[in-house]
Length: 252
Image (cartoon, rainbow, N blue to C red):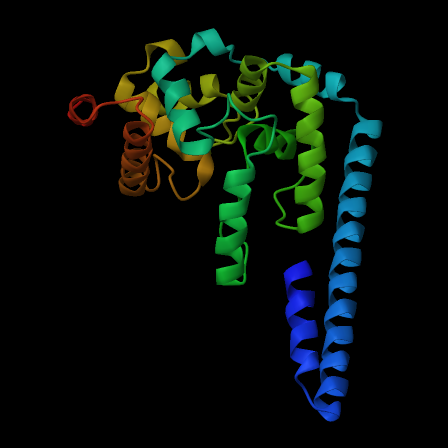
């Protein structure tokens, strides 16, 4: 901003009286536009914070968590294969154990892509943000809800460790066919307990929550396989699998 003002002053010093007037008008317009955008931004953040406070005042976080843990088919993190955890982290939030609830890099990338497309095409949400949305908010893509999600994510990270957050996420994600926990999904699709899933099945299951109806194992098995390959590629990229290990899994 300071560099812009210096250049602006240099241009004015070399301009005619008419040009000076025009440039001052432009300067005022730019200033008003900046103030307007900042005001809108503050208003949106304020509305998002109010949404967060309203949600948590109606049902405290601890109460929400206890309700989730009382589910009949609640799945503890030690009940799922390690490769399933690695698959989820790879495809959903590979910096999960490094951030404090939000991933600035992912949000920046998603914002740029959304601006290019002039639509919400990429979320950039962390596992913690997705958990916030799953237990408190709707799936509606609105900026106010995204801001509320951020505040709620900070609250979750403040009260629970990473493994606890991941476990809650595994029990609030929708896998299609009425399944909201890993245990329900593994029984529904593979007829077995989560721990007994093969590597092939575990990775397949990890890809479904991104779009349960699209990657349905019963309705769109080929799309589910394509999603599985996407998950495997992410696992290779983030060093959870080697190419040879991935090839062996796909042969199962």
